[in-house]
Image (tube, rainbow, N blue to C red; front, side, top):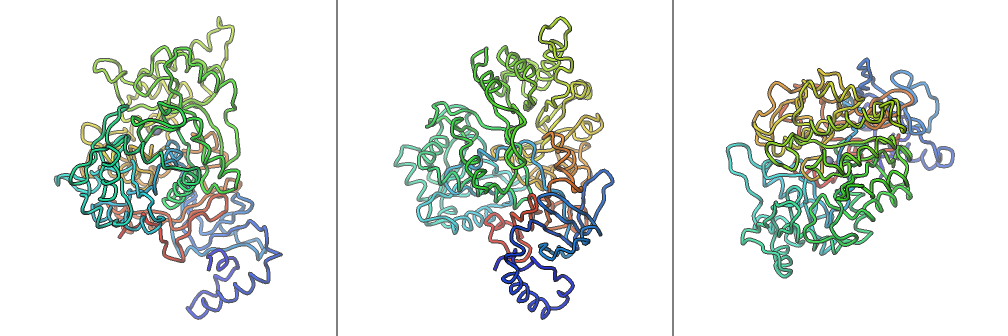
Length: 599
Ligand SMILES: [Zn+2]
C-alpha cells in the first residue's frame, strides 16, 4: 500500500491508539476510492507535528508547513487554515526537518553515467559494512549485471588510525556477492578491487588482477588496469542502463537529503562517443552526457533539481569550443527542475593551468558574454610545478585583470559593472588568505567550500578549508560535496567534517576552523540560494519559495540526540521536492541498499 494513499486524508487526531490507526487507515482507503475524482490533480501537502527548521533570517522553527502547487503556501498555524480535505497530510511525529539540501558543486551527471549497478559506499565505515552494502545492492540487480562502486569512497573510511588500510579481498567480495561480478575503484582512476567473477572477466580481457583481487591504478590521464576495466564496463552500457543510472543517482541523493544539484560537468572523452582506456571516472562523452537528464526531464521523471554548468577544457588558445558555447546557447535558462546556469568548473584551461593564455582568453569571453563562471581551486601550484603560484591566487588575480580590462573607459566593448554582478565562484578552497577573500568579494564573487574530500583523504598537511576565516570575511559562502569521484555526496558526512574537523581515520586535522551545527547547515541551505542565483526560490522554508523539505533520521541540532560521531549516519526519512514526496522511509522500513552499513 502506498503511503501516499494512507496519509492523504487528515486523520492525525484519530491516531492516538493502535485500533484507531487501523480504522483510520481503512477509512482513508475507502475515502480515497470515493474521492478519487474530486481530489485528482490536487497538489497540496501538509507536514504536521515536526520541528521544522526554516533556516530563514530569524531562524524560525515551525511545527507544520503547507505546500501547494510546488511552493510553500503557509507555515505554522497558517498551514492548518485550509479547509481543503484533499490535502495530503503527513505526521512527522516530532521529527526534525530542514530545507532541501542544495549541493552547489557536484557531479551527479557523472554518477548517473557509471557503468554497472553503482553502489554508494558512503555509509560504510568498515569492511563488513562495505560488504553488506554490496550484498544488499546485488539483490536489486538483474542476473549478470555488474555491481560497481566507482569513486566517492576511500579505504580510509574502513579503518580508524592507526590500523592499516586495505580493500576488501577477493574472497570477501566473492562471499558477499557470489553471483555477480563486482568492481570497486577509488577516485578518478583507482586503484580498486574485484571478486572472482570480475577477475575472470577482466583477466580474459587482458586486465591484470592480483590474487587478492587488487586492481592497480591511480595515475591520471593514462591507461591503468582500473581505467581499462572502466572502459570495458562502459562498452556494455545502453541508453536504458544510463537512464537507470541517473534514476539510481537521484534516488540516492534524495535518500541523503540532497534535493538540488549544481552539476559541474566532466572531462571530455579522448575519443568522442566511445572513449578510450585512459578515461577515468570524471570523464564523459560531451555529446551524449546530458541525454539521460534531458530524457528524464521530458518524461517528468526528475526527482531532484539538476542545474548544469558546462565544463570547458581545450588546447586551442582561441578557445573555439567555449566561444561556440557562448554564442549558441543560453545561460541561466530552464525551469526549476532542469536549468542551465553557466560555465564551470573550468574555463578553457585544464584543472592545473589557470592563468595560461587559453584560460585568459576563455575568461574574457565569459565576462564579455556576461555569464556566470566557476573555477575550482585545490591549492595546487600552476602546472603542479613547485615554485609557481598557487591556483587560487592566479584565478583571483586573473579575474581582477579581466574585470579591469572590461571596465576600462578606453575599452570600446566596455561593460561598466565588469564581472561584479555575475557571481563568479571559487570552489573547494582548501587554502585562501583574508586579503584574497576581500579581493574576490570586491569582484562580486563567492566561495564554495567542501568537507567530504578532506574527510576522505585529508591529513594534517592537507586540511582546510579555513571555514572560520571565510565566514569572517563576509563574502558569500556556500557548501558543496564535490562528489562523486574524490568526495562523498552525503551532506551529513560533509557537515561532520565542518563541525568536528576530523577525517575518516578519526584524526583532528582542521582544528580552529570548525563551525557550529547551525552555521554549518546554513552553508548548505540558506546561503546556497545565492550560488544558483535563486535565493528568491531556494534555500529556506518561507512562503512563496519552492517546497523542498527533508525530514531527518535524527535531530541534527541536538548534540545529545545526535553526538558528533553519529552525524555521519544521518540521512533523510522523507524528502519532498516541490511538494512531491521523492523518498519516503517514514512509515515503512526502506529497502535502500546503502543503509546496510547503518546501525
Ligand atoms: Zn568538481
